[in-house]
Amino acid sequence: MSEIYLAGGCFWGMEKVFRSLNGVIATTVGYANGTVDHPTYEQVCTDTTGHRETVKVEYDPDQISLTKILRAYFICIDPTRENGQGHDIGSQYQTGIYTTDDDSLAIVNRVVEKEKVNYPRFCTEVMPLKNFWPAEEYHQNYLEKNPNGYCHISNAEYDLVQALNLEGNHD
Image 1: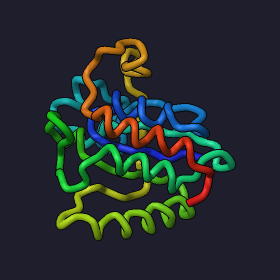
Image 2: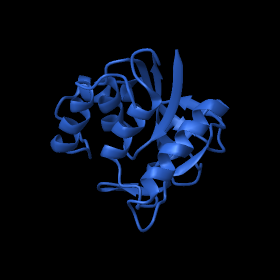
Image 3: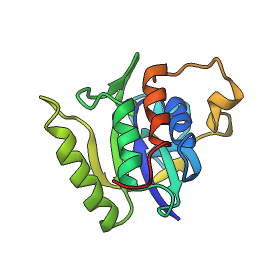
Image 4: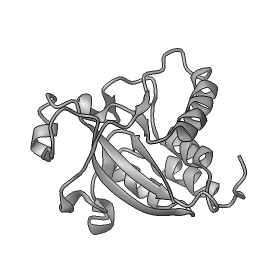
């Protein structure tokens, strides 16, 4: 089992995207790389804790590559925006990729360098994970519990992610 932590705006839609990928074993939404231990959603929303709404993605690298997970990620985010995605604005919505080992960081850096050439400005953070605190239970699998809940990811983007499941596990 491997893991990667991905911040892409509101974590509800991002979690739905990653849960839909073959080879993703588990997801947990939470708050990453902030300055407060065990923050609450309300604290994170004050824009003072430095936390990012983040999805912990646990995956089987024999079934899905980190590169493919990152392809799905970049389908669903706007890396040119700082502190926001969709209609959401604030530092908790900053995009970021947070790693827990050097091998993952090397893969992330390679993918990010290829992505950067597509944009005049690139704001997605890339760094080691400092900390991660699971969000409150009502946030976990939110869109499964609330199918009509808010999601900044379009149906077209979701369809592009689903098409990744039809590919083999090659990069």
